[in-house]
Amino acid sequence: MPYGSTHHEVLAAVFQIRESQLPDADKKPALHALLWQRALSPEVGKWSLPGGRLGDDEDMTSSVRRQLAEKVDLREIAHLEQLAVFSEPARVPGSRTIASTFLGLVPSPATPELPPDTRWHPVSDLPAMAFDHGPMVDHAHNRLVAKLSYTNIGFALAPSEFALSTLRDIYSAALGHPVDATNLQRVLERRQVITRTGTTARSGRSGGRPAALFRFTDSRYRVTDEFAALRPPG
Image 1: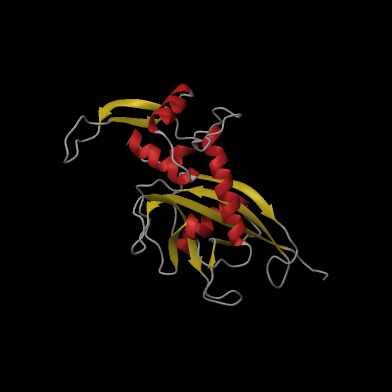
Image 2: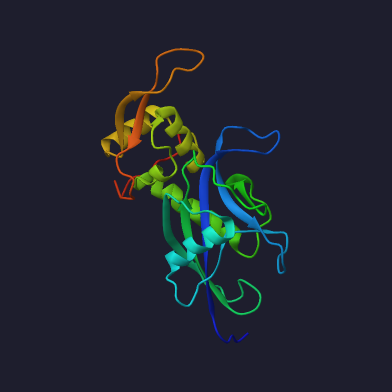
């Protein structure tokens, strides 16, 4: 089918580590994606990544930030980067539309207010997705998993200060497999990714020795070991 003009849209796969809000669900932290539900045809009722058409006077990063603010009221993102281009000619009905996807990360303590048609969904249990947005989420998740191995990108998912047990839960949720806290500490301290704050967390009701608190050494993205991989226990 021949096409006339080609349109360009920007779409964001925004992730956060959250406890599931579904009834009877496991309450341990899990990776969630931010999705909004389509109210109009085509694909009415299905869930989509936030975003939209690239403006004639916009660069792509400015456009995706604007659309996240306007459409889902999300204004503060700890990390945002362009990932991939989806250009299959018939990926959406009508005029040919090329999509550039972005990875966005929100720290786990943040609780952004969302419009009624927007919701966090566990990545492991996504609803029916519009067009090719399901593969886009999968691709963004795979890139996040890879980047957790060789960069300091965990800073964008974690609180400003944290106990190692919290960081273990964040990495386990994002990677999709259990992570040993002691090994994680050893690896990240060796790469100078995390630093001790010199303070401790408040003791819980059960008492015991207060946990030492850590922070990420940098709050900007950097490669720490380009050949590293955090592998599942085996």
